[in-house]
Length: 497
Picture 1 (tube, rainbow, N blue to C red):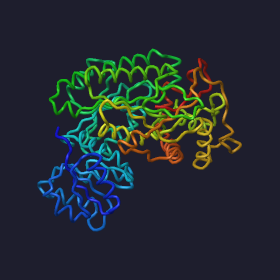
Picture 2 (picture 1 turned 30 degrees about the horizontal axis):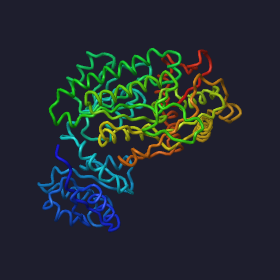
Picture 3 (picture 1 turned 135 degrees about the vertical axis):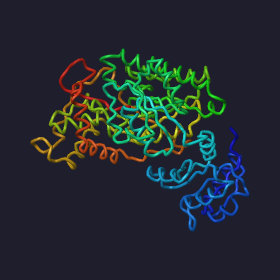
Picture 4 (picture 1 turned 60 degrees about the vertical axis):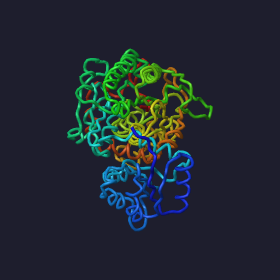
C-alpha cells in the first residue's frame, strides 16, 4: 500500500489554513497544496495530483459537497479519497457526507499534533473497493452488537454485514427491526466455540473486518454460573482468533494489510478505582474483580498474544457501561424502567453510591467503526461517555423521566421514586469505574454525541414505545428475578456492556 504523501487542502478561513498547513507540512511531513475556495480547488486540483483531498464543508460559493462532486467529475480525481472537515459532526451528517462520496469526516476544532496521524489512519485503512467491504460482527443480535449492525446497515453505504450469533437468552434478531431483511445483511446462527462452523463462515464470506462482540457479559450471572463465561469469553475468543488467523494468512499481501480484528472489551478488566479520583487509561494495570471481568481480561490477553505472536492485525477497545435501546432487562436501566412501569420495587445495591461512566450504545457503535476504519494495529482504545453517575442518581433520573413521559403508570402515591428500595450489596462489588477517553478522541476524532440525560431520555422513551419487544423478552426464561446473590425474589442489576 503506497504511503500518503500529497494532500490538497481546501479551506477558506486563513487562520485555520495556517494552523492546518503547519500541522500537515511541518509536523506530519506531507506535501500540501492549499486552495482558499472550492472554485480554486477545481481549477488547480488535478494538476497537483493529490493522494487525498481534505475539504472544509462550510465554504462560501462552492461548499464542500459541491466541490467534492466537481472534483470527482475530473477523471484524474475520480477515485481520489476525499475527507470532510466540519464543526458539526452529527451522525445524520456523516451518513449524508459518505453517501456523497466522502471517505470520512474529521471534527473541528482539530488537534494540530494529531491531524496528520488521523489522515494517515484514514488512508491506511481505506477499503480498496468500498462496495465490497464485508464486516463480520460476532454477537450481532445482542445489545451492543445489534447497535453496531444497525449503524453499519443504515449509516455506512456499501458495507455488507455477516451477523454471527448463536442466539442465547440475550440475543434477539428483533433488535435489528426492518434491517433484519436488509439485502446487505446475512445472519449466521453460529456459536463462536464451534471451530468447524467458524472455518465455514470465513471461507464462505471472506470478511475484511471482524468486530468481535460475542460474550457473556452480566456480572451477576457470572457469580451464579462462571462456567459459561469461561467457555464463551475465553474458549470462544480463542477459537475465533484461530479461525481469523488462518483466514488472514491465506489472503494476498493487500488483503492482509487491509484486514482488521477488533476485539471489544470492558473497563471492568481494570478493577476498582474506589474513591481515588483517577481515571482508567490504556496503561492501567488489569485487576478484575468478578468472573465476568476476569474472563474478559483473559480474552484481551489472548487477542494481544495473537497480534504479538502471529502478527494478526488486532485492535482492542475497552468501553464503559453501555445503555440505550434493545438492552436485555437484567441490566440496570431497562430493569428499573420495566419494574417501575409494573409498580414493582426499584432495588438498589448497598447505598447506591457505586459510580459508573455511562456510554450511549449508538455512540459506542460509531466509536467501534472509527476504530475499525482508522485505528492503529496493536493499539488499545478506551471508549467512554464522560458521564460519571452514582447508581442511585441514575435510578432517580429514570424516575424523573418516567414521571414526565408516563405519569399514568406511577404508583398510587404518584411518585415513581417511592419505589426505590435498598438491598444487600453483591459480592465483590467494585465502587467506581471511570474512563479517560482522550486517546481515541485525539487520535481518531471520535467524541460521544449524547449527554447522559439526552441518551437516558431517548432510552426511556424507547422502552415506552417498544413494549412488544420487551414483553416478548420477558415471556422467555428471564422474569426480572435477582441474579448474583444466590436468592430469588427481588432483582437488581448493573448496567454494562
